[in-house]
Image (tube, rainbow over all chains, first blue to last red; front, side, top):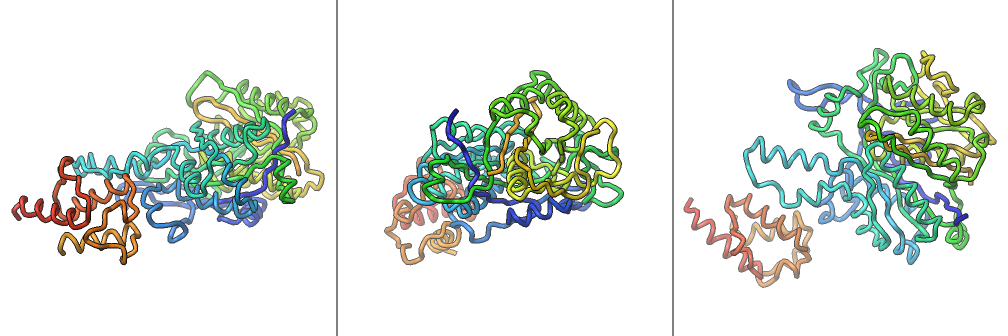
Length: 408
Length: 79
């Protein structure tokens, strides 16, 4: 057994806002941050339900640093600043911290601009800073530079599982004694026109629901049509127990297990067995009995084919105990932040444990019979004895990752 | 706008350089620009004056030398 690892700070740049407590309250109430957004131009483009972030950097960091930061990095740095502030981590322990971030695409809007210059303006004079701005590792590098963090600055680019893996790897590094503290999470900003058009062609995005755009993300519901793309950055501060005791800080939750697996099967089609393997591995890693798990924050994105696969995997892992579990998808209200999704969901799960409140699956009005677990429809639920929860992220490419969190 | 005044303006506006530090004999390094900022700065200059600074000419030290080079390239362009 290694050292215990606690979450001591959170920073959000999320579709629901920047204050973790108020974001959680809105998620708990099933209050959607999804809106209809026009991409492209008036006569060439589309209207789609999206979960955008109302974010401008303004003078929140020095101008010369902003010059070379793509949107994902900008959001990541501000989320990291908030997380550091809430953890109270300063001085030497801060300087030795590691940075473990997930990011799927990096500076998508910068890449788009570079292509526009070349192909549309027929110019070979793109911005010289294009390359360092499109790197998926931008968020981790900028956090390290901005706050003078001299530990490893690692980026995990594993599609939808990016930030869950980032958190899991940071957790392991601290548990095993390689680090005392880490800033970890994810950042994603690819709601630029070119990226949205590509996602649309893949046929996985939700269309606008008849009840309104805000009701378009409907995991486990018979009327689900796909997922709602979102953007944002979420950073967690993780600390080893000894460091925590020295500072007398009140942790938000404890991370006790992490499991990963690969389907080795398909780029886009999820596999029950791979998802099961990740959950089993995480539960074993946490050294708990599966019957101790009370809540699963599901990956469930709201695609017709994906949600039942996860439900089946949960049933196989938990067997008789599956019927006693609460399983919800908070993507119903914050959308799918891809490389930042796992971090937002792990953070929401941590607050859920802290408050003893399970967040719901919103818009679940006509449950799909193939998703017949307790999916906490509509509104959150008070569970004062809530103690252990899983947070799942299952990625394109068949990478599966699960975290196990415990009330601190 | 003269090349020198443009340089002074872009350095203060975009690169956040303290105006008091901008002197003809100052180098870009003196003003706190790292290598990435310098290439981006040259890109700004080329765009503004519609010129191309050949790689073997981008070796100026001071702002005064940079302004002289830009004036020369504008002159050579002949418009």
